[in-house]
Image 1: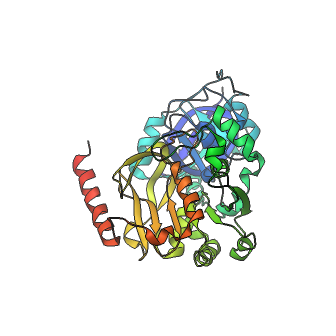
Image 2: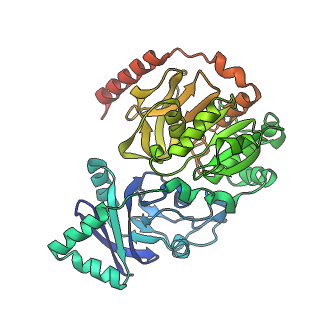
Image 3: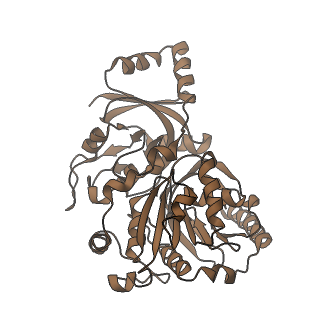
Length: 433
């Protein structure tokens, strides 16, 4: 066991122990509240450029399971846990996370007060940080700088200067190494993951039933850093899926003659992707059904004329409550994002469909002027929750009947939705404990 340090941009230093790879790395320090699913966290391309802190105290107890990877590599910058398990127990386990981090050259830190760190990030907001571990010349110089005020200030300026850039272009295609054909996806999902779940909570264990509505239809998955489970969920509905790079143009996508277009999740500031947003505008004019998730949701909103802004500390974890405005039902969702669509910027034709019940931020939009809808959360979430996976069935229905959007009915027009949003915030603040 060797010492390791986390140095936050505000000057706070945590001393702990090193695991995984050693060295020095700077990233945006964030936290995620998931109690399980750490494998999916480690392999989610949306964490590109970030040092991820797990708030759950014990990580690694079921080991490393490659079949559950969301991409073929780890894109985060560093990994922080309270305690990691070096003797995992699971019948699918093929190793432990220390070895995984070493193989992926990801620097890890443990044995610090992750609760204190999380409280700092909640109060001050996400901020850059540096993990220092090992005995390299750079590491020793940085450790020495912590005890010299002038040198520490130089180090802090270096930490503050870090920026996440070209995130989507860097991670696109990350999931290709773990993609599998539909028959294997459904078989393994029935055994180890989960089968499709309908809106009323019924599980569909028969692949013929699950796939019948999507048979013969092609979806282009536009990969902005797509999690592998998005593709799995589409395949489990019988859809043919063709994955294209984030650098693809609208014209190249249309040449594939898709029946539907899936805008994937991904990392970074959505507004940075100017070219992609322009191409989404072109696709919105074709009448082809579109479904966006996370970053795809944000960029679709930008293409339609909305704006986005950065959240103080983001939503990351598998326990985020979202309210479906047309039904009044609350679902528990998995999320991983630091930006949100601004509710008061929604253009005509964009109807707020889901809101986060904790802070009232936009969690979903349905468009009445084009066959498109999107959600901020992850209905494909694996290891769960499964509550909103029915949205993939809604996408299949829209593909089979693109005119459905013309019949979209809701008790909330744009003004009413904003009024509802305001009353929801007021109620949330008044009843918060």
